[in-house]
Length: 433
Image 1 (tube, helix red, strand yellow):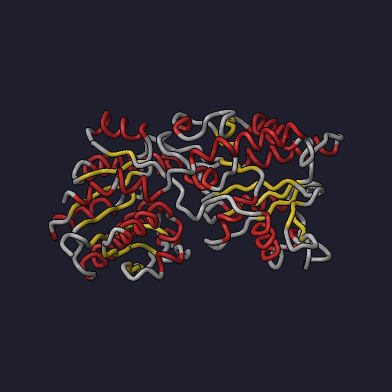
Image 2 (tube, one colour):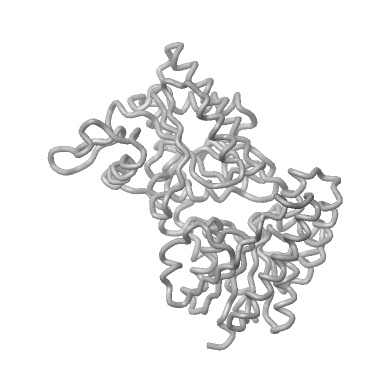
């Protein structure tokens, strides 16, 4: 089929890049032959792994040069390794008519994908999730020479793309104003797998999770979990004495400060001890990332009596069911650039889950305060929101009405799903070349 081969490039763990997975699946549904080039690690969604139009090509992981070299030399060696391995991975697969690369990471992916596209006369598209230089500045500081080089690199190779996608209107405006780059805003939307579920499906999830996490189980696990119970007729119901369930998803990086949540939970624990009408809480924080061990150490030091925290890595099919079964989502994403939106909130909204989200400049493109969720600016506000949300749970009529109002508002968000949105906004960039 003419001009129907596309290469999707992620210079990272492809299984932890849902947006690029959704791109790949949408291409396959539209008849494209899809080559995915990235690193292995986390399992991609099953539909993608088994799709006959999709080939996943994992690159050889980069050694941790900084264990043996000074930081700057280690960084240079890493860039050289990734440049060679990515270029070879692109050359050794079938020729692509289109290349779409995730940014960040920018270095060296933007340059190598541009070079390959020039050599094979391919359409070269960048999907701007954020800026690589702003993430680098979180650890090195804004004035570091590597950050300056990264700014130049992103601007230079960003301008050489045939077309550009981005995640917010704010980023679209910034790209054009700062670097003269024209782009199309493709908002993240939930795929069909993120949807509300029945109490029975929630019961089945908790029963399954109880095998690994006993806090979800009870003494009579055949008919009940800590949150649900089976009725004599075979139907499932929420237990009237159940704890609250909050969930957050994270990549455990510098742009998410989980000390805010830990502080808010500490306030919650103290309020419960003082006699406030608050339920016990189960807090599930999913994800993998560099700072996970640090925060898990802080969590283990807590001696809470009414709050239990677990940090699992869930299977792709279990994560949507957990979101759909929770009472409240928590998002601590702060955005290094202030121009991207947290995809975890999109997933939560797809499942009908209201959120408390850390406030930053363009969050209003997704979260409308007191309509489909709440925004907070610090740990004190998050603490107040947690206690307000769960006061009297699960019997309070005011709490039930607020929850129903937020979930009703989210029904309109759920009407537009990823593939329909992608077909309208992204597909034309490839169909025209």
